[in-house]
Length: 64
Image 1 (cartoon, rainbow, N blue to C red):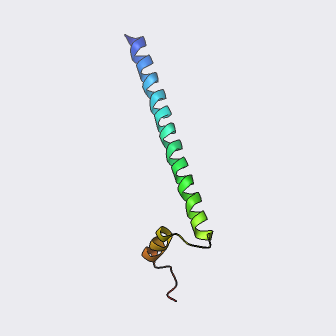
Image 2 (image 1 turned 90 degrees about the horizontal axis):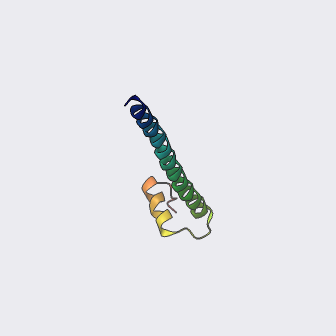
Image 3 (image 1 turned 60 degrees about the vertical axis):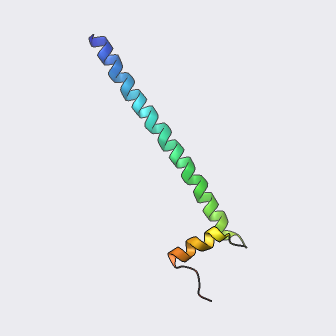
């Protein structure tokens, strides 16, 4: 019985670490895709409507 508990605990810890690592990798990749898209939108000659709305919310767009 002691061996089963030990192996169960080790399996739980490895599974938890593996699961958290995969979740963090997924979140980081989503973040990078969003960041790249934001940079592309900010340097584009014609700004997308979504970018303009976001800038208005931040009150950064010039009032020319």
